[in-house]
Amino acid sequence: MTDIPVDLDKHRGMAAQKATDLRRALAEVETHVRELREREADLENRMMSVPAASWAEAAVKARHLLNLYAASLPTEDTRHRALVAALFDDFARLGGEGRDE
Image 1 (spheres, rainbow, N blue to C red):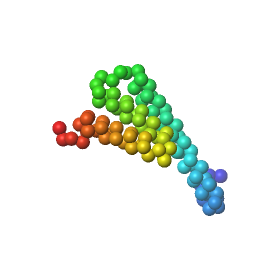
Image 2: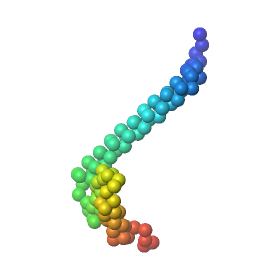
Image 3: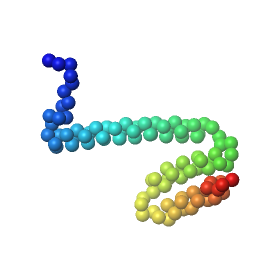
Image 4: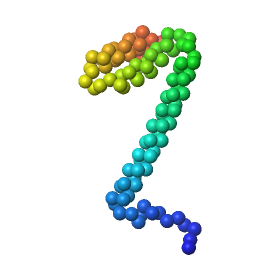
């Protein structure tokens, strides 16, 4: 017996190695998705508990809400997608984003 760990991946066939790699990648993605949802919930709780102090802060909240709405739209709903995009353009134009001030 030795204290050196055995790398079991070397003893598996190619199909088993691919299946193991897929399971590991899926577990990693699921962990990242869970962490992202937790961070998003924290952000939304903070947005709800603190009133906006300016129009720019209110626009940040509106952008987040519009992104959630746009993500739920069917791909073929180009009219509403275009409306959301136009509103984002308005936010950028009226908020001075992209200007060298």
